[in-house]
Image (cartoon, rainbow, N blue to C red; front, side, top):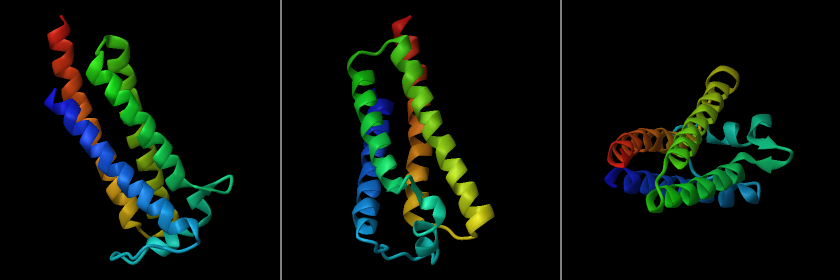
Length: 139
């Protein structure tokens, strides 16, 4: 149960990060950044899909994942376990694709994006540990 709570907490922090980024950029501004590449990343052609900022997609993912983690904590079963792990893997995969764009195309880094991605990766670790232990308890 500890790993499930930690996964939930980590995704809650990721949601805060995504909301801050969405609000800060919604008016065309860029939040203050210490790594020096945020403006380039957040205003690049890769920062929007169909005119919608990727941070809004991050919010949607985080909210969906929080809801799924809640179900996972309340009613664990094999199907929910698989869906939670698959969702965490998807989040990390998208993060890696976006990081590759930053590294290979933009040659710039967004601190907020990296924090969000790191939190998603950490959630995958917690989900994997939580899944391992929940599976042992069900048997």
